[in-house]
Length: 332
Image (cartoon, rainbow, N blue to C red):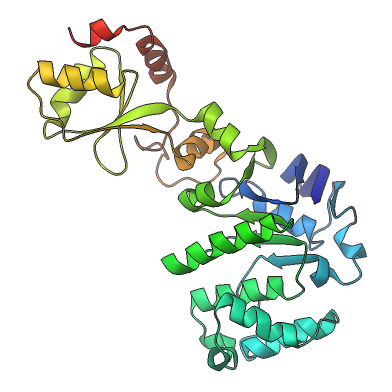
């Protein structure tokens, strides 16, 4: 288990981590989310003793990282896959880590096989590794001590589809063995498939600490994905009746308010063809974006695209009013 209590880190007058308190329990994959500059990397560095906290504490298995006798046997971490001497082979890199913590050299071959780096590749200098190969080596280093706790920052970075699926299955299997798995990722769709629990921070402060299922149930908005050859005409018909209509990133409209049956009836009564009516809910990415928007430090443009921005007060009001409409009103 990882446990932080009042964890704070300041750099001069800037507060990177602000009184964070949370637990990362064993037996689950815990996702760590936050926009750029939220304090995720700093928090992970504090857990691993790479930075000293200004105040508060963080422990792994009840002990501070610096007091662990053979840390690689207790905690495996991947913060920067490029943190490897380019002149060394993958095998020598792992062998050195193993020797420093009293780990048998046979474990090197085991983790190389586990992460899919064949012997011929493992004997090459790492400076010639692709991003994906470097990432696999970093994961092998995290697993070298067969630790009970894993801390991984963007573990799927640079991996192809097969590699991403492999990471997902590996994280789930390690958690099923009773280990503590704490990982961050910018791939929200993958996090939604992988994590059991979420910790969300913004500007160094805790925004959410909850099971994934509860997080989505509390914040995800039910809607219907609609596709039609006359999208603007349907949008106008829906909005005049109080529906909230947003562009779906995959194409078509996300319609909140009326159910699929009411939308279909409305389209039929106005002679509109409909190619898709799919009941859906907001994805983790959509919910997270809306929650984290006030905490974003770095934006591209104004950060308020129709597909990702949080609802404005007017939109929130429209969404509330739509719930009072009856089914009969939708087909008039």
